[in-house]
Length: 274
Image (cartoon, rainbow, N blue to C red; front, side, top):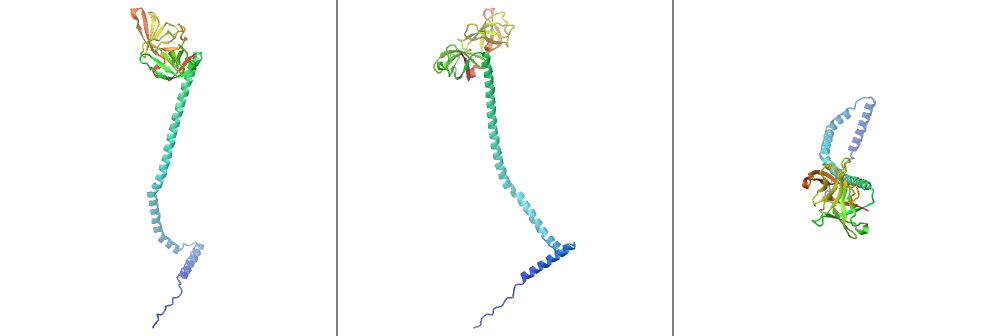
C-alpha cells in the first residue's frame, strides 16, 4: 500500500518582508524629511488615498445633511411643545394678574365711594334681582342677624340704589329707585341752580324728577343728588344725570328725565347705611 507523500511547507516570509519594507520606507521618509526633501512614496500614497477619502467625506456629509433632520426634528418638536406650554402658563398668569388688577381697582373705587359718604356701612351681596316682575326689587344676603333694618338706605358704587323694604333673619328685600312705589327728595347739584323736586320711578330704566317749578333751572347733563328732605335719605347721595327736560301737566311745571347713576340691572354688591 502506497502512502501519500506529505509536502513540507517552508516558513511564511511575507510578514517579515512587509515589516522590512515598512522599516525601509520609514527610514527613507525620515532621511528625506531630515534633508528637507519631499518623499516620493508618501506623495504617491497620498495621491492614491485622497480621491476615495474625498468621496467618503462627501458621502458622509450628504448622509448627515439628509438624516440630521430626523433627530433635530424630534428635538425641535420637544422644544416647541415646551415653549407652547410655557406660553400657555404665561398667558394664564397674565389673565390672573389682569383680573387681580381689575379687582383691586374696583375695590379702590368702592372704598373711595364709601368713605365719601361719611357714614358707617356694611356690604351685602345681591342674590336676586326682580324676583317679582310687578316690583323693581332685589334680594341681598343680609338680614336682621347682620344688622339690616326696614327703610335702611342702600347704595352701590356710584350712587343710590333704594331702601330696604322687608327684612328677614338672613336676607332682605330692597325697593329700587325705579319701582313705581319709590320716591326720593332730589335737587340739582349745580350751584347756580339748586332746583329741588322728587325723583320717582315707573318700573322703567329711567326716573322722573317731578314737582319742578316752570322756571326751575334744570338742564340735560345736570347731576341729581338726594336733597335730604323727608329725613329718610341723607343729603348728597348721587341719584343720576338729567337726560331730558319736558313740560309737565298744565304747563305750570317741568319734568326732568333722569338716568340712574347705578346700573340697577347688573348689581352684584351693595352697601347698607347704618
